[in-house]
Image 1 (cartoon, rainbow, N blue to C red):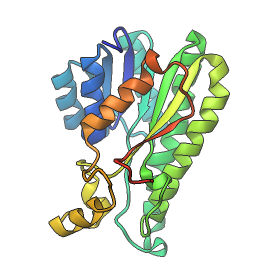
Image 2 (image 1 turned 135 degrees about the vertical axis):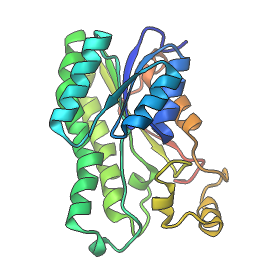
Image 3 (image 1 turned 90 degrees about the vertical axis):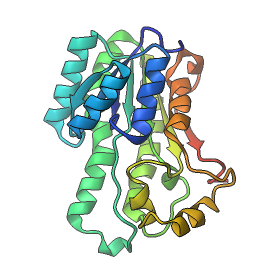
Image 4 (image 1 turned 135 degrees about the horizontal axis):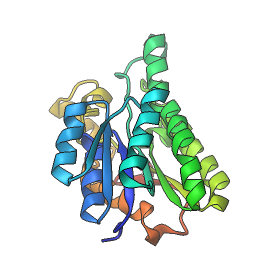
Length: 246
């Protein structure tokens, strides 16, 4: 029960890696808000974990403010924030990505970290304790062609994690990131361009361990980084990628 008595907000918690993190945190004793733009998905995972469901658009300031307010009202305090919500564009030459696609990707993947920090960092500072976990990607460490602007948002998230860690450490707040390789999530088809056995095999050939990241992998790594066991760990971008980035 490494998170006994802790409270957590997990954005994008209704599916994929976010759902895996929600399940693990609950199993380790945390009270969890499952926040997702998909209301039904949030309700399903919250029902499964005994958590609190919240509909949120992480790219919208008012929606994020409401999410934070509800969490603080229901929980009394927030110990852990997991910025997991994210989107991508289909593989294509960088110049073919539309401006609307570009703006939405940066709003969801990058601006959201700013918006959640605006609402929750002051609260964590007032308590002199907190853990923030940003879900980045191996795309931010070892970018692939034709996902240029998605890669850029994940590189941004890694840099944001490190600068947040340095600034917030004196306030008792730790900030880390996870960098998964592609996994069995709703975004897999977008990363591959098309989810076919041939494309899966081609991508798996680049992962030494020979499999995709799973929601359970992410839950386990997230649990460690957000627990008191990692009290000396901040500013880390931990690769959970089966050796992909070596």
